[in-house]
Image (cartoon, rainbow, N blue to C red; front, side, top):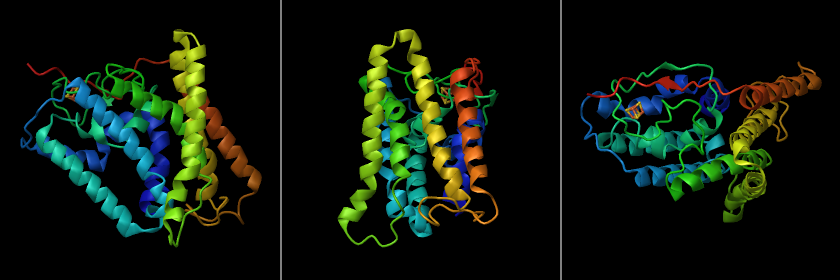
Length: 302
Ligand code: SF4
C-alpha cells in the first residue's frame, strides 16, 4: 500500500516538477552510493558505450518489470520487498566498483529513463546531495545538464534505441497497463504473459506514431515532440491513476488508496484529471525550456 499506492503515484509528478529532489533523497540511490560516500568504491569510469548499454538495459527492465505488478507485485508485499532488495543489491554491487551515479542512478536503474523523460523542464536546480566533486563520470550528466531529455545523448546506437523506446513507447505502454486488472490467482502462464499484451500493444502503437512524427517534422521540432510525448505519458498515468486511488477505478479495488466513491461526485474526478492534464501539457510543452538542471554540478575534481 505504502509503496504502490502512495510513493509511486507521487513520483511522476515529482519528476516533472523537481527531479533533483528525488535524485537527492531516493532511498535506493542513497544506499547504492554508500560505498562511494564511505570511500569503499573503486571509482572506475564507464565508457560511453558501456553507459549506453546500461541505459538500454534499464529501459528494457522497466518494460519487463512494470506489467508484473498486475501479475505479482501489486498484491504481494513480500514479492515487492524482494524486488526492491534485489535491485538495491545489484545497485550496491555497482556502487563498489563505479564512480558516483554512473552505473546505477544514471545507468541501470529502471526508473531513470522515466526521470529523463519527465524531468526535461524542472522548476529549479537543487544542490547535489551526493557528488562532492564532479569527476565527469557520466557524459552528459543527467543531473547537471540543463533540460536533459532522453534523446540528449545520441552518442551510441544504444543511447539512440533507449531514447526512442522510452519516449515513443511510454504513453501507449501506460495506456495499455491501465486496461489490465490485477491477477489475484495466477494459475496459468497465459494469465502471466497476458499482463504484457495490452501494455506492449499500446507501446507499439505510440512508438510508430512517434517515429512517423519524428520523420515528418523538421529537426527544430524534435524537442517539442519529445515534450508532447512526455506530457502524454504522465497525463495518461494520472488520468487513470487518480480515479483508481480514490475508488473510482475501472477494476474495483485495484490500486485503491481510499474509497471516496460515495463521498465525491464523479464529475469532480473528471475535473481533477482534466486539470492535471492541462497542467502537465502547460509545464512540459507550452512552457519555455528554462535552462535548469536537476541539481547544481559540484566543482570539478582538481
Ligand atoms: S555530477 Fe559529476 S560526478 Fe556526479 S554523477 Fe554527474 S558527472 Fe558524475
